[in-house]
Image 1 (cartoon, rainbow, N blue to C red):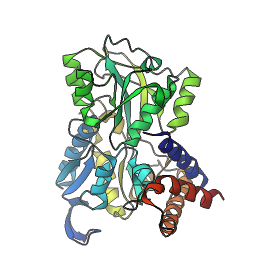
Image 2: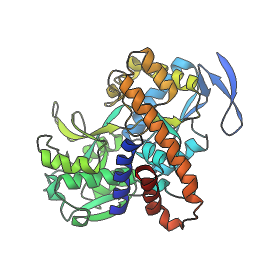
Image 3: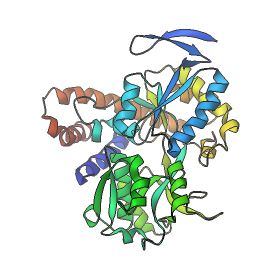
Image 4: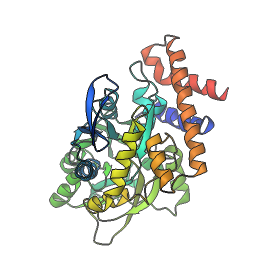
Length: 381
């Protein structure tokens, strides 16, 4: 990941604040599709690869929702943000559990700053939190983030979201991108690469099945964050303001009862805005109603508790169907509604200005830089 992309993302974060029974229906692509229990049948999710903690959580939730509604529920996977969101845009998947592409896409930045994409009209549906961190080999001599100087660090292919988190963690340790050796690699290839010594650390959700398998083969450890080190945390948050520094436990490499502070942030269920409010409401209702059935399925599914999910929109608005459910359950505030409307208005501005920007016929290689500059001028003057 380059400093250029980092700057663009930070610019857009600040701009967001500134602007800020069976039936039949027809999909966005014009084909008819059955609806069972209020959901499309089949109801298809898009998410990270098989074996990741993100996938495992979603599989547990999907089983409960399928049993509850009677709809067939399927999961398709991709290791890349574009791949996950492309399935949703093509209406192959009705929803996705996404990484930061939920707001990269909303703002049309990073890998979405090109003629094929631009700002996407997305909405959040459900926002459970997940812990992530950097894992190293036990006995490697890497005990702090400062110890990563000169080490081989993964740069995840087509995933600026993860790369930004890694750069933020380096900044926590007082390191710049040029202080390490970058190794280009796929997200799901990291555990094997750490095992074979191709990389010196990996970044993933801490409860992924491949990480427990890795623990069975070698000693592993997590690099801890210190929430009391305010200067280091500030360097981290300045680069990745969407994360929280919170403890996790029960991960590979941890003793029973041990806690380690890592990055905790949402990998939300998201949909396109045109999705039916009734269908989204049915989905949220089912996920909340069936929570006791999947609560203890994985180490992270307890965080899907309706009482613990994020309910204040930050970078992308919530869908009307979710707002309806939150309102009925006393979880939607006037402050949340005001922020939601601000973000909806901002998204409309992004999409309107995107069309105007493309009309200037920018060169493809100039869009990643030109689009942030264009929208910054239009919004802030």
